[in-house]
Length: 131
Image (cartoon, rainbow, N blue to C red; front, side, top):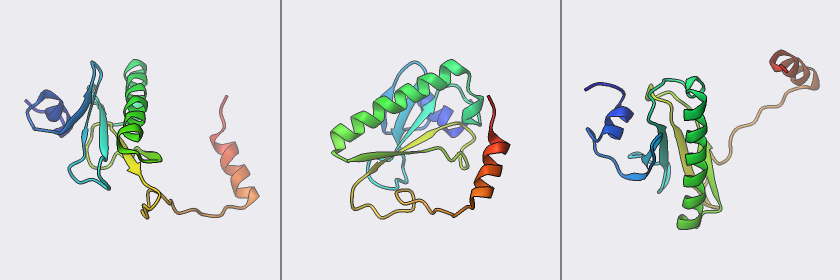
């Protein structure tokens, strides 16, 4: 029937470990988790880029992501749930939710930082600013 692997999962053509579903979103465990409970939240509308989702689908995805993250914190007892949108592996917008424990020593929990001068920061802000 085609579509991305996520569309196939949503349709039930490929099995998944579903943790949540509503009329616009579907969430399931990542089969290669960074840590236990690593969950993918996917819009049922198949688009490659998160920012190309229609506004109502985007809002529904964000609302589901918040609901699932809060549930994960409660059930798993983790102090934080990290969120990541990287969009490289599957051409279907999705959000990663990562339970983070205090002892987790992973790049996602401690991102690398770079130092920029005030001039570089000012130039970038001017380049990106819009009203």
